[in-house]
Image (cartoon, rainbow, N blue to C red; front, top):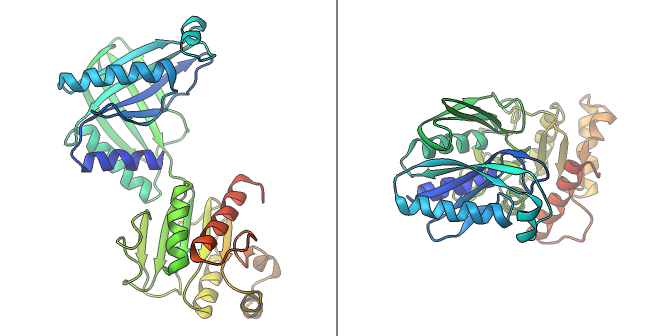
Length: 328
């Protein structure tokens, strides 16, 4: 969802008007569940999916009609996925889907709401987008509200009454990956980690390296005054991941000591076994236990013979996927 929201914001930044299709209610055996989203653009291309086949074709057709009308409307349609209709569209399913179609204008209230949601996702803050519409099928009087830290569930809540409808959609940030160091390995690791769904934060004490121009895919780039205390202001929990790829052994040692004091699910440090053993000996002498040390993955990454920064990034992200999926 993070990547989809970012794509929406890019369209808004390009001053483009488009239609958002959202599955708000489903029943029976349908191809997509509540919360599935798709964008229909003026040229007929789409982003995301609401299930393909009949549902997607209907959403595209109705979306293009709404864009042609140019009146900024919204509507709620029900697609009956009976066995007969499903058979005609090569889909084996039944039940039905309620799909909300909204015309999103780049300077409209919905666009403003999504820009705010995107910023909260970048900062790792949970939120809910509450959309209230007057009417039942032909909708008007829409109001959008972004509520922080109120995404208790992971599915939208759809309410309908005689006056209109109300939809509360949760936006839950993905797991946070904190990459300490902004060198070549960090550059490709941040790029790859963003592709596989992590919220990426790059941290370094060199402004020439730690900047958004160098790391456009990162959700946050932080310039530290130094590596001592580097984790103090970060909300690291059991869903956080730490990669240590700084420019020197002493910085790596400092960051590792800080990271082992957090609840991070994964802590990985780049380096040879010789370097690792020296750092471990130093930490044990400072009072860390062997149990603390055993939390660190070093050498970092899967053993695939990686040599270049790009290959090392792939091996690191492969290990992240392994840990995230519980396969480690």
